[in-house]
Length: 324
Ligand SMILES: NC(=O)c1ccc[n+]([C@@H]2O[C@H](COP(=O)([O-])OP(=O)(O)OC[C@H]3O[C@@H](n4cnc5c(N)ncnc54)[C@H](OP(=O)(O)O)[C@@H]3O)[C@@H](O)[C@H]2O)c1
Image (tube, rainbow, N blue to C red; front, side, top):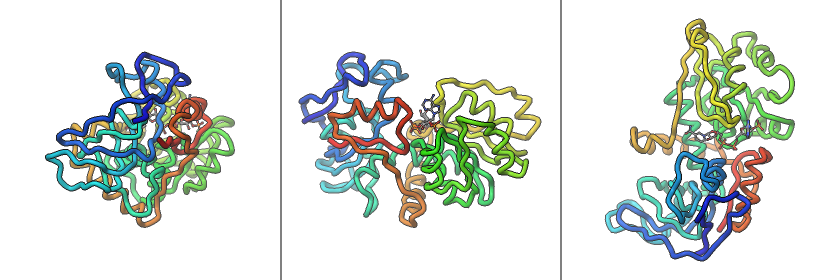
């Protein structure tokens, strides 16, 4: 089969498609023909050897896929050849075929395209679990979503609206603000220019935001603590800015703030029951037309370097997809 192979640490621009043997789908696994794969910033880091996970060489990168089941491992129940599935996987999505742990695979809802399926398995559960299980977002609350046109950001805007919150979005530049508004944001603020902290205060009549969805970190977290409401929850999702901020705990005390974190990947290990619950809820919202993955662009597999460059340059919005 054709696959992208990393056999030494390399620049993403050097990633190339090669002929490799098909992966084996043994016990507990599904053999899946990959129709679309989602790209993430950490794919860039992984190719360069700068990610916390450093797989042994050679490996096929890629962590999100949608495709069709070809073979079913001997002990696997609940799937058959021909099923359309989506999954988050540790490795192997940038290929024509992948071995997928059956416990990580979800049957795709009718009407969902493979591109949409590949755009779904990380960002939607991350945003749902963060907003619902960790931040306890309630209808009528003000939800501030930073980087609202990014992968997890768009999902947070859509889910926040679906849960009845009033959504205030921040993003850099007019195109991304427009994307955030189209995803359902009630207010959109350019945090790359002007005093966004003051703009959030104005948009909440001085109260501040009840829940702040922070996938950016750095200065954005610093500013967030100045415009969070009494009893507010700061939801820590990631550090796209590259700086892990430090928080003065007197701020947490003075405003009754909760700092809550969410690491979706760790749920498989610590709270596996949440996975099914989360996807059931999300597929319900999808069927009701309340959420829909947004795809920036789909590239052929051999253009993975261009696809990752769109993410690395901060040009893309929503999800970037490749098709084998
Ligand atoms: N906790 C979890 O389980 C979990 C799950 C998925 C992702 N994450 C993390 O969440 C973060 C965002 O992921 P994503 O998939 O949404 O990424 P993405 O699609 O690449 O979006 C990231 C957004 O961050 C903003 N940003 C701010 N400063 C930036 C900088 N210096 N460089 C690049 N972008 C910057 C950009 O929006 P503007 O241009 O509008 O500022 C960009 O659209 C990452 O750190 C990722 O590791 C965490």
